[in-house]
Structure formats: structure tokens, C-alpha cells
Image 1 (cartoon, rainbow, N blue to C red):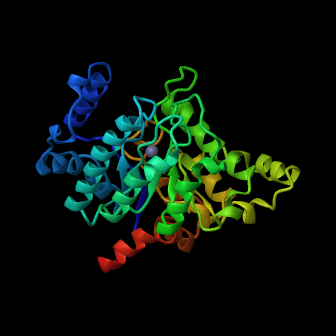
Image 2 (cartoon, rainbow, N blue to C red; image 1 turned 180 degrees about the vertical axis):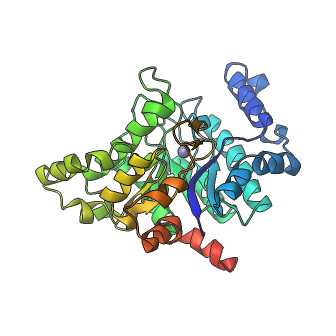
Length: 342
Ligand SMILES: [Zn+2]
């Protein structure tokens, strides 16, 4: 099996964006605020957006299943207050749940949280519980910077975040550490803010005892881990200077990197530097980079091609990257697959 652990519903019907526009208009004029029931999207509309986009590409590329969450850049936790994020997370999570119901063999949902700048993350627990218990979500996306590029929240190692971690450990679900839209002009959303956040999250974990407090807590650091694999020597040296244990024991039972790296040399570096057990196949298709690479004649985000071609993975390693590691890091996904006899 080939499991893509990083997909978003970037192709949701236009009605979703229109509902969000009304919600934002409602922040200025409450009479305009829509109810959740004002969003009407039919199963056929969902089918069409999935079949013509993500599922078509999955079939073309030979991928079996995607862990599917709401569009990351649309989370925009900086907009409005907790109630704004709460209503928005509810409608977005429900849509991904419906995708998983319509295509149970191909999509398993992961949840966005109703985070809001300065608000206690405890406030996210209700939605997290709803998504795991009623919608069968197998993971969450955790935004380390709900301010959208101003980094006003404490680091991920701070006790501020512990209520979410306690629930993650209880449910045995991982979090993908995933920021959203940047509203800081210095940081382009997908070109800088995402990659900065990946690198930042890793260093926050390194410079802490977080995984001593939560030995089974698991984070997926997307986009190949930002700058981390490229600078592995720097991080090893910093660990030594900071008197932490070596990275293998300090972080690598808890942190995992996906393969959303859009060229062969990048995947070669990732697979050469990072242990195979810490690498999860992903493409984030129909996402930030949708174009065709003129050098290869294939889509930049067709990451399976790079995994196939890299000399640093054996056949057994590839099986782990495609399937085995995902089943281990996402035990609830493994349970869903076992129920399906897969
Ligand atoms: Zn993403």
C-alpha cells in the first residue's frame, strides 16, 4: 500500500469559501454572520471535486490512501476570535469527514483545531474529541503560530500546550505541526512561513525536555522537515552544546518527517540523512506547488517518483516509508485499515 499522510481539501466547493467570506463579514456586521446550516454542499459536489482532482492523481500515481485534512492556508486562526475559529473548524472538519465517508478506501480524516491567538489550547479539546470519537479522525493538525506569522504563542515545549498533548496521548494520535496563512509580509505563506515553522518546531523540541514528559507523543514535521535534514550537523552540534541526549534518543522516537520535498536531490538528502523509520510518504498534492517541472516533465508534487528513484532506500525501506511507518505513527489509521481487511 502507498499511504500519503499529508493531503488537504484544497479543492473544496466554492460554497465553502463563500461561507467563510460571510463569516468574516459577520465580524464587522453580526447580522451577516452565517449559521453552520447555511453551508449547503451536496455529496455529488464533493464527489466531483475529489474524483477530478486528488483521487484522479492518486490513481495516476498509484497511491492508495490519503490522510486528509482541511486546507491548511484557510485555517487562518488569526481571524476573529475563538468562536470564529470554532465555527470554521466545525464546518471544515465535517467536510473532510464527508469525503472519508464517500471514499472510505481512499481518504481518512485528520482534524484542524479551533485555535485562536492568545486563547488557552484547552479550548480546542471539545472539537478534537468530536473529530476523533464521531468522525474517526486519526490525527490533528497543530498550528504552533495561530497569530499567522507573528509567533506570539509560547514554544511547543511550553506547558501551555500540554492539555492538547494529554489528549493526543490518550487517543494515541499524532499531530502534524502545520502553520496557516502568513499575515506578516516578511514571510510568504508556503515559501517561507511553512518551512520556517517546520524548522522552528524541530528546534523548539530539541531545546526542551518535552518528550521526557510525553514519551509517546508524536509530531509529524511536514515539508521534509523544513531546513532540518539539510542542517542535521548543526542540530547534532547544538544538541551536544545544549547537553541534551543525542538526537536519536532525544527526538527520533517522537518526530517524523514527511516527503513533501519537490525535487530528487532533496529526497536523496532526506533519505540519506534521516533514519528510514522517521520518514513518512506524503505529497501534499494539489497544494502549494501544482505546476509541472520542465526539467522532468512531471508534477513537482509527484513525490513517489523521487522515492522510487532514490538510491538511499532499499525495497524494504520503501515499504516502511510508504506504509509501515504510517501504520506505526498513526495507530488509528492502522485500525481503520485492519477493519477494512487491508
Ligand atoms: Zn499541508
